[in-house]
Image 1 (cartoon, helix red, strand yellow):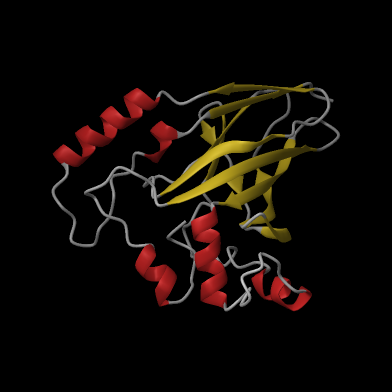
Image 2: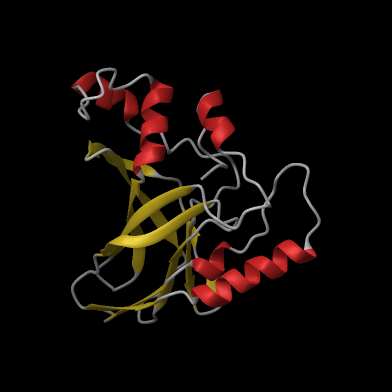
Length: 213
């Protein structure tokens, strides 16, 4: 997430990772809604991100929203919040990776589908078009930040289309933390604060199988 959120110095300071810790700094509940065409081919996916309370508060403070701290935003404030996390830099993959067999599918840029604020948490939704998928074969979906600065879980669930089955394999956290320790031990301190790319080890695997046609 640190690669594309272009906010003011408050958030920039918070967003500097440290190789001295194996803990993420931002927590996001994720929801995935795959979209198929009439042939059963995966053509897009709607992604929901619900940010943790602390990060949501930092975003509001950065944008000067909710001055009375009543947990409610006016219509004007909501318009200023809309799309705050969709100004991605070149090369950022959106922390979403989809494979079909050995091939990694190409996902398009985010298309905003709305932003909300409730119970102290910001939720944003975007849609991404998918290229290169073929019908009749399962797809592997994973939401993760390679550097594990941001932690994603599937708290908002997977909304599979009719005729599809979803199998979720949870990450082996013991193995993941062992990998972190090994990576930190093997990697000398980085003056720029870059963290070893171990995020995939913490990601649940979502296997989506759909009936073609």
